[in-house]
Amino acid sequence: MAIAKNTVCLWYDRDAEAAARFYAETFPNSAIGSVHRAPGDYPAGKAGDVLTVEFSVAGIPCIGLNGGPAFRQSEAFSFQIATDDQDETDRYWNAIVQNGGQESACGWCKDRWGISWQITPRTLTEALAAGGDEARRAFSAMMEMTKIDVAAIEAARRG
Image (cartoon, rainbow, N blue to C red; front, side, top):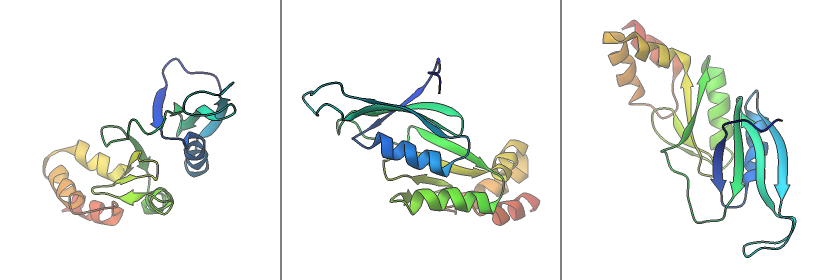
């Protein structure tokens, strides 16, 4: 995996490699690249500790930085994964939530490392892009959901 010109850097306490492995196993077009280890002891760790991990999530190049507990993730950053149907929506949602993550609202969930995810069926995005009454109905339906229910969104689109 070549180093990209622009890369998303995600701060982890100490589990960047475990997170990268989970993402690579869960999402298509995801992979782990290089794992960089400390060449010597340092104030917060020892030689051989993982410092950074190069990986991709659904084609997006990332670096996981084991920076310690100084900073926490927030919803200000999230991955948005577009899904084609309920099965795909359920697969990603369940993988994240059942691996120590937590549910949120309107298709959002958080993985066990604190990274936020929007698991968003394309039908919802298409409804919002359509505008007008279709968008209002789909938006109203979405506002009542935790995980997005594709059939309910499609019903709302039709009115």
